[in-house]
Image 1 (cartoon, rainbow, N blue to C red):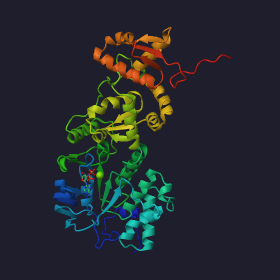
Image 2 (cartoon, rainbow, N blue to C red; image 1 turned 120 degrees about the vertical axis):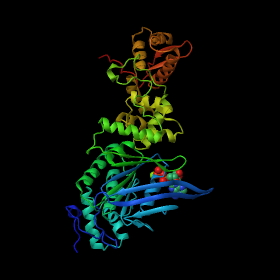
Image 3 (tube, rainbow, N blue to C red; image 1 turned 90 degrees about the vertical axis):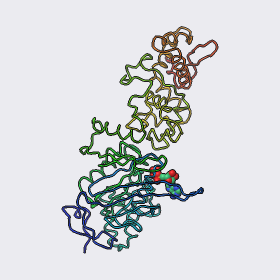
Image 4 (tube, rainbow, N blue to C red; image 1 turned 180 degrees about the vertical axis):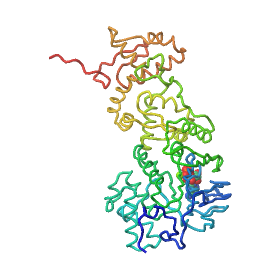
Length: 474
Ligand code: ADP
Ligand code: MG
């Protein structure tokens, strides 16, 4: 039988067919038909001090026609559960079935897309895509044809003979998708497939995958997506299963998404679901307003009175910006706090400072670096001072001090002057803290200096990043 194209396999195709490498024909499952099932599943890993329980009492069903997101913080057992469902890891107890049959080894109905792409660097795109079929004993000619079709489907046309190192992250992950889709899995498994990509590439690839899924251009009947990103789960899934990690992985709650597609991130229903999922994941309400700065003050209307400086040192905010850059320019705030063994509240002043300076934005639960923030985080000391000096003028108190000093005949002003100005709006403790921050920021930007004795600010007149170039005489 001549192999049919992926597209023709789908167009109205309800006939039984033999997936590559499977032994029995697999009828196309009707919507709602049970594909994967885990009952009372537990999983422990052997550790130095005995068994380490990771999953406990997991009951999960995946049905044809649905996208299920497994959502949880890092370490909650998402990847472990996905590998069990794919038959790549044996459960410690409980039952696992695929289309009603107990799994005894690799699940014949699944294929996996990994966060790290997992491509073999010495093989071309085409050879990487063919790998999955090779393992299933498909002949070379059939393999080649199927691979070309999968490559075409996923937008890699023309890259067949390229090597992974020649490709961008986004194109590499396309190879990851093609390699999974080429085996025509009944259930596509994806383990954080977008988290290693930059924000725009991830968004683009997510969109394309959803279009393919909606148009039914591949025979896959269900998707299981592992993610730690709430917004991604709400954007893509029909059902969100939240895993909790304390004391070990259990299903905390399931959410039916039920929003129309394509989904509007700005709709009230979208936001409301994000809030509910957030509460389940973190056990508390989502901060929609960052403390310390009234919401809704646009950049050009901010004053020292309506926009107090958050308590964050230059070291603190550049450290956090570098961490986010290291994670690809975007990361989940709760995870970031976890990594630092802090509470979200502890890092919010720094987050607020990054926002105020235009270095980062909050998007859903994620902190996302802006272009300016990316440049700042990646710069050497001199460059970072220059970038900071331009950004810090977005901080009203710093601007107030700088312009006041420029207008004062000596170029100096006592700290008491600013204390008096601020005293109308803040407690003396708040004033002290804000002046400390303004001192730190203005010094780093080389806008002004501060002498603790006699508590005096002085314009920094060196050849500094923050200085306007001196007017030249002709
Ligand atoms: P997630 O994907 O949600 O981040 P994982 O399933 O990777 O979580 O890991 C869950 C827990 O199991 C973590 O504490 C992790 O350290 C542990 N773990 C994962 N894989 C192994 C392994 N092969 N051996 C021992 N412990 C493991
Ligand atoms: Mg994982």
